[in-house]
Amino acid sequence: MNRIATLSHSILATALTVTLTGCVVAPENESGESGDHTKNPDEDSPEGQNNEHGFIETSYTTSTELGVNLEIGVRPLELIEEKSLKLSMEVSNSSGKDYAIEDALSDPENPYSASATTLIDPATQSRHLNNELEDGSCYCTFTQGVLESGDSINLEVMFPPPPEGTDFMTVTTPVTSPFFDVPIIESSESAEEDYTEGEILSLTMISNDEGNSGWSEQENDEELSILLSSDVLFDFDSAELTSEADEIIEQVASEIDQSNSSTVAIKGYTDDQGSDSVNIPLSEERAESVETSLSDIITRDDVKFETEGHGSSDPVADNRTDEGRELNRRVTVTFEK
Image 1: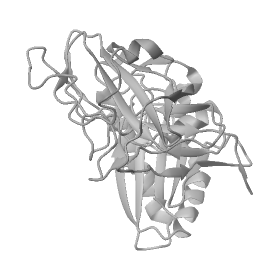
Image 2: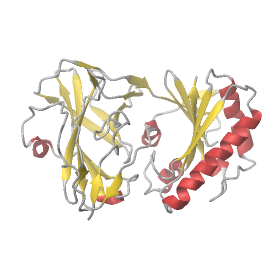
Image 3: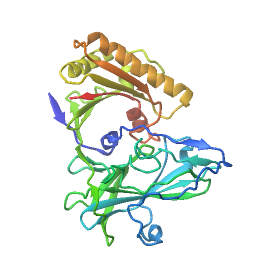
Image 4: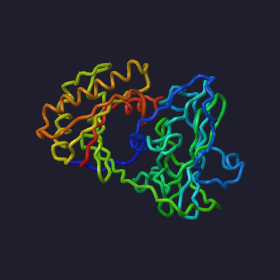
């Protein structure tokens, strides 16, 4: 029998499922100017607004080549005419190299933006995605080129309004740990008229009664994602499934057999200990081991598997703690219900 689990801070972090990275370029590369906003949801916002609000919280990135030299600061969320909620963040490069922003914070359809950030409402257990403009693009600021050494850039994203009475939300990005309890303040700005509100997805987490079995689930209306602890499935630095993993794999296979999905995505992740040259192949080999085991026992013959290894990218918790690193060592199995 399954039970609904409480959305603690570490569980909330598992809402993040998009893997996005940027790349470092040589300082002499001048292919574009950082801070060139080609789209801006708030062209008329007053200068100096950054200093007026200040940062609520800052975090170093954990999934970029610049690491702690790329810092993201988040300001209070601004509620505009009860219609939209604006997220404003500043990205700073304190390294000695220029950084190609590319899609570090974005989805593939909206590069050079922060479109892959989301807002989590713990009270309603929901995840808010960005609003869209008439052409289907993100209602965001966009930039081009590189973020030069020592420079900063401001990025904004517009979201649907929160439920009435909501005072705080959690901000998630693909390259940092979540920003918890970001306050919501009233704004005097005007809202853009021609946009579509972003989706609000159910974020129900389910755990089984055994509690410490290395298994949890995350679902929305369309998909089920099963998160499996690598510490339970594998021995240290190994991609060979342990005997303890057999029962877990059988449960996952049963879930897949009962679904309508024809494609199952299996992704492996590690913590940030060690180098990418070790972590990425290990995470891929672990995903392939889970695929091999599942394909042997699934009774349906119309299921195709897609496996990927992402190494330490896309952390769901803070790699600076033992508990966080344990959560980041995982294999996810995702399929349509």
